[in-house]
Amino acid sequence: MPKDVSDRGPEKEPLIDGFGRHISYLRISVTDRCDLRCTYCMAERMKFLPKIELLRLGELERLAGIFIGLGVTKIRLTGGEPLVRRNITELIGNIGAHLKDGSLRELTMTSNATQLARHAGALYEAGMRRINISLDTLDAEKYRRITRGGDLGKTLAGIEAAKQVGLEIKINSVALKDDNRAELPDLIAWAHGQGFDMTLIEVMPMGDLGNDYRDQFLPLTVMREDLEQRWTLVEETYRSGGPSRYVRVAETGGRLGFISPLTQNFCAGCNRVRLTCTGRLYFCLGQNSHLDLRKPLRDGLSDEDIAVLIRNAMTQKPLQHDFVAAKDDNRPSVARHMSVTGG
Ligand code: SAM
Ligand code: SF4
Image 1 (tube, rainbow, N blue to C red):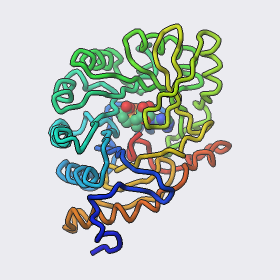
Image 2: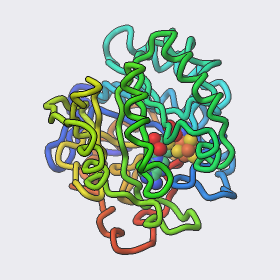
Image 3: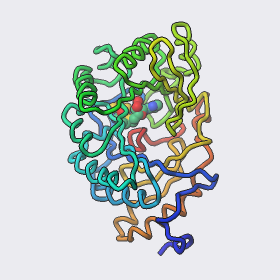
Image 4: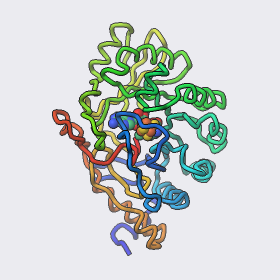
């Protein structure tokens, strides 16, 4: 039985890491699988994990409940593509039930939207109100190339369905040196025209993709200069609680975020931890320290004992990520793929 802070009652106090940061946000990668193979995220011939290694939906639900008991108030489901996991809407409904008593304040998701036309209604019914959707181009041929086979029409239909049911949408685009640099202003204008927020993301060196990430890497400092040729960007004090820094585009009236892990470190206010589809709790996207929760779950530990393990492990959360180490190097700074930890 794990000891230490158990007598204080693990459910009663917030999760605090070794640097005094309050951990209130959990991201859960519900699957490493995906129906797309984006060039910056996956290798062309991905080897996925054996099913037995994945947490079952009941195990994911149980861990989500334990984290909510530990004061986590926001959960984001990600992957892989969360909507390709079978019976995912059941899990969403069950986690969403915690929204009713206010113990969970927000349940949200990051999705590629290919399956969203089918599921948007169920997400809204489960209490989801916002969703992040990944879209790097509005050119069907380029979309097929970047995603290695994706159908832009299906994705846009998913986005439209989400809009129709009333989900608030944020579009995430990875800034890519050759593929979308010239197009991003138009994509931003489109998103703002639809009433969506938009965030640009720098490519992070994760997982062996069989390429050199520097061939795709576009510093957002450069992208911002491009945008300033066309628009007036007004600094915003708004923070979503995440790593994005926001501006308002004066001409479109829309909000634009920048996630720049390589050119602007954002770790000081980090409030999140990440649970992989295999039950590993990572304290940072860009570091390797983790706590395995699958074994304690399958060994039959009680919720209380698992909560103590989690609370005690918070001291392992590092001050900041290590992506900068890979800046002048073509090797990924962490070996696992983004789809395992969840972006
Ligand atoms: N499949 C879903 C999707 O694409 O939205 C959720 C998982 S995906 C891994 C989450 C986010 O990570 C996406 O916005 C994607 O663009 C981003 N991403 C994937 N690999 C990345 C990388 N190497 N660098 C930066 N962002 C990446
Ligand atoms: Fe799939 Fe999302 Fe990775 Fe693209 S970024 S391959 S959609 S998990």
